[in-house]
Amino acid sequence: MFTPDGRATVQVQCPEAGPWDTCLQNARGICDGNFDTIRQSVDDGTRTLLFACRVGAAH
Image (cartoon, rainbow, N blue to C red; front, side, top):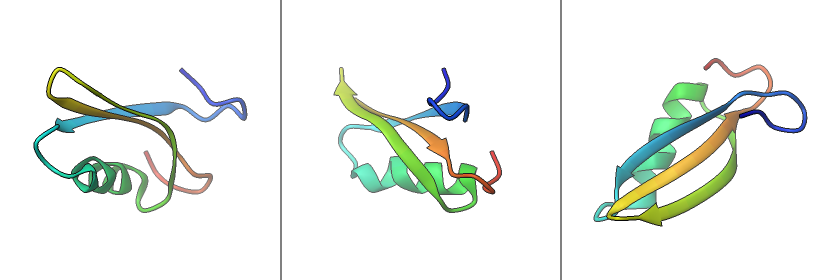
């Protein structure tokens, strides 16, 4: 899946019992800091974050 501007999206999952910050920290680590959230969801005890690294960030 890609954003309208052509960036690849990445999905990370973390336990629903923990804070969203766990998923956000994973995304920051993958992108070396900056990313745009595409979608956040919670299903069957799992938080899912779909995001795209900002231009200039690694992935």
